[in-house]
Image (cartoon, rainbow, N blue to C red; front, side, top):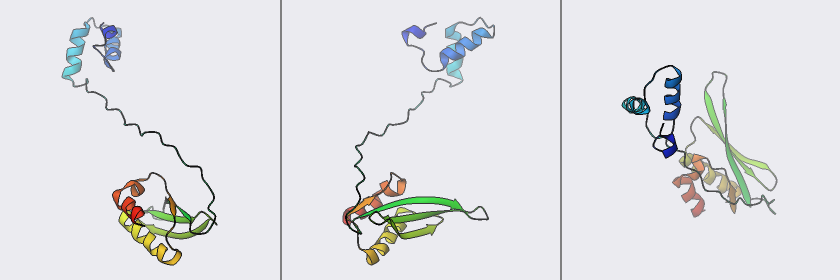
Amino acid sequence: MLSQTGIYAGAFPKCFNRIRKLGYKWNHKRVYRVYCELKLNLRVKRKKRIPPRCPERLLVPNKQGECWSMDFMSDSSGNQRRFRTFNVIDDFNREALGIDIAVSLPAGRITRYLDKLAKYHGYPLKIRVDNGPEFTGKTFINWAKSH
């Protein structure tokens, strides 16, 4: 077989060896022709790797309102209906500043809720979040840069 030259890559050598073990005396060219006709020779698309980042050390803030942490949680009610909660916590005294509960929490609703919290507590100097889709979207990033 021509696997040493690199012509066949992927799962074809396994298929060819399996066919030979079953007792068929077909050569690799014939098996490869059938393999291609069945469209089994499609390339596997690899997952893109996220570049490594240097996370900052978690420092305890010196005063209230300096740094907020935000995250989502999900649960289901008694009738199996799923809902999500958006939690905002002040890192200085670990006080829960607010919890928003809804079935759907898009980034626009999150930014409106943060503006509502900021009217009462003031805007924080830093925000600590994970890499969720609500936090990496343009709506939230533009809000964070403007405030």
